[in-house]
Every structure is written in C-alpha cells, then in structure tokens.
Amino acid sequence: MLGVDVRKDVRTVLALGLAVVGPVSLALLLMLNSRGPNAAMRSSEMVTYALVLAASVFVYFHWRMVGVAPSQGSRRLAGWLTVALLAASLQKLGQVAMIDPVPAVWRDFWPLVSQTVILVVLIAMTYLAARVDVPRDPALLGAIGGLLLTGGTIVVLRFTDPSLPSRTGIQLLNALMLLAGVMLAWTIWQRTHVSAKVRGQLALAAVLLTLAQSLAHLDTHNRWVVTLAVVANFQGALVLLTLSQSLLRSSILGHQDELMMLQETLAKARADVLEERELLHEVGSTVAGITTASRVMSQDSRLTHERRQRLEQMLTAELARLDRLMTSRHPEPARVIDVSEVVEPLVTSHRERGLDVQWTPQELHAVGDPDDLAEVVNILLENARRHGGQTVLLEVSDSDGYVEVTCSDNGPGIADEVRPQLFDSGARRSDSPGQGLGLSIAQRLMSECGGSLELADSVRPGATFVARLPMSEMAHVAVHHVA
Image (tube, rainbow, N blue to C red; front, side):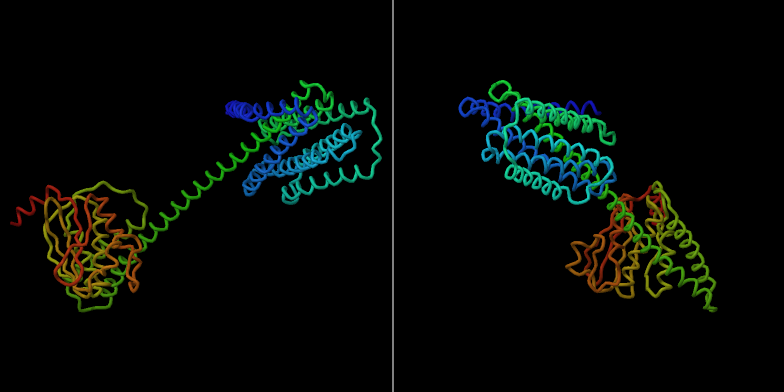
C-alpha cells in the first residue's frame, strides 16, 4: 500500500512539474536572457516561496482538522510543520523584497547567513516536534517567527558595517549552509514517529531548496547553474505542496469517514429508540388490560363462572404475549392462525376497561404472525377507546383472498389535516394524548405479514380501519363449512 501511495505522489509531482515548472522555467529563462541572472533567480524565489506559503496554509488546515484525532504524532507534526513553513516562507519573501536596498557587497553574503540561521532553527524545530506540542496556534507562531526573522534582517542591515567579505569566506559559508541542509534532511529522516513517506518528502524538499540556494551562490553568471537552481527551487516547493495537499486530503477523508460512522451510529440509535418506544407503547396497553382484569377478578366476588373463565383465558394469552414482547425474539415465519382466537382475548381486555366492543367470532384463518395481528388489533381498539367514543364495531370477514379485520368507531373521525400523514410515525392531533406511534406500527406490521392497513371510506360518523392478512387454504374450508 505504501508503494502505491509513493508512486501516486511521484506521478503527482511529475504532473505538477510539467504543468507549472515547465512554463514558469521557460518564462524565467527568457527573463534570464533579457534582464540577467539575478532578476531571474529573484523571481524564481518569489514564486517558490509563495508556493511554500500555500503549502503552509494546507498544513495548517490539516492541523486544525486533526486537532481532535487520537494520533498525537500526526497533530504534533502538522503543528510544527506549519510553524516552520510559514516562518521560512515569510522570511524568504521578505528577504527577496529587500534585495535591492541591500548594499551590493552584502547581496552574496547575507542571504547565506540568513539561510543558514533558518536551517539551524528548522533543525531545532525538528527535535522539538518529536517531544513537545506546539504551545500556541501554529499559524500565529509561524507568522511571529517570520516577522522576527525579517525584522532581525532589517536590524542587521541597518546597524552593521557592510564590509566586503572574501570570496573564500562566502564559499565556506555556502558549504556550511549546504551541510546544514543535509543535516536537516538527516534529522527529519530519523524521526521514526512519522511515516517514511512523509519523512522522505520533507527530507527531499529540504535538500532541493538548500541545493537551489547553494547553486545560486556558486556562479550567478552561468546560465545552466542558474537554470538548475531555478528547477531545484520549484521542485522543492512542489514536493512540499504535494505533501501538504496529501495531508489535508487524508484529514478530510478521515473526517468524512468519522461523519459517516457518526451518521450510522445516530441512525442506529434512533432506530433503537424508536424500537423501544414502540415496545413501551404496546407493553403499556397490554399491561393496562392485564391490570384491569386482575383487579376485577380479585375484587369482584359476583363474577360468573363464564366471565371468570374468559378473564383467565385473556390473562393467560396476554401474559404469554407480554413475555414474548419483553424477550428478544427473531421474526418467525408466517403460519396459519385462527383470527378469532387471536382477537378474542383483546376484545375481553378492552371490554373490561369500559369499551363497548361489538364483535361476533368467525371461523376464518389467515397466514401471518399471531403476535403481530394481536398488536394491530390492540392498537386499533386502543385508538378507538381514546379518540372514537365508547362503542366499537369489530368485524372479521373474507374478501378477494384476504381476511379483513374491520374496526369502526362512533367518534369524531379523522381530522383532514392529519389524514395525509396518518400512518407516519409521530403523526397526531395537537390535542391527542397519544404519541402518534400506534398506526405507523400497525401498518408496518401488516405490511411485513404480506397484508395491509388502511383508513376506509365510511358514510357513518367515526373512523373505520381495515387490516388485511392473506387468507389460508383452511379459511376456504371454514367458510364453506359455516355456509
């Protein structure tokens, strides 16, 4: 994987080199012929360190984005690299801008001194980057560092006697600067807490930029030497620019991955919360029926044997369903169910809670999950008890291969503003005491069983809901037998 990344970066550098270095180098060579080598070198340095400044901006944004990342080494590297690139680029741009006011005898000597100082500072930063975090915002520190270095240059030029240094002294200083650049590259490469790819690019950029400065002071009248210095400058800047955009891209992709994971976690949390709310919705209604039946059985001594038997059957059925609701169970395959056997305990439960449920058992069988059908009927009866008055007509019939359970109440009906979102989760009237979950749950359960739930048109007052389940072959036999 590392080899693939390296090859990709090499291709990027070459592409940028052909797109940027070629045309700019050609323009500078034309300038070299028309205005001389000094002007060409100065212009190349302005372009080079403007690119380095852009690279520092990319790295700074990378630092901002990895500010909350667990990788402390990556954050520390990005911070100190921002300081180094920003300070070096600002100092160099300021130095290039001040070349003309500098006395001629200083134009070869002072850039070497300042460049050597910068390299020593960068070596010190490399050691700090392995041990200490950036104490403040790196952009602020880098800007302050660049201004201090530029201000130091102005002070030195103003208050120092510009005596002519010997040519030998200049060459020795040039060799010292080149040695400092190699030391910087070696120091960077030894930082094992940084990936080899990043270390290699930083070391290469340090060597190229230092080499460009050294070549520029060897022979400023040789066209080929100046051309090589210009190309080394641009290539060093492009390596830094490629590295910075790679770091920024990796942090952006990392944040995108984190955002996707956060969205998935949030979606799962919402689904879990909705599932818990749906469970509590059904459990609450079931427990209410069980509580009412238990109280009636324990307090009413006048219960007839038939009524007590119905209550006991209801309690047995509802307690078993409650147990299944409270345990984590996988969806079971659809099976043949006796619709009246499922509906009867629920009718008994709601009758004991004061709802007048008019219902006549029918021998019809459907294909589905009995607990799902029980939950749907319970939701329809609970809604009718809360919103639809005191009387409910519950009918079971067959139609076009489906068993239909029709629940009609004598209440005010469904408000027009609620109808479009009637089966959406949370849809309810402003004065409704419910949560708006029941009908959405019921419709989903019917759909999962291969059936449906819809609001039927009715000429009489109130609301009529029709739940449909596929009819089994046993249903046809039962209908024929009844007929």
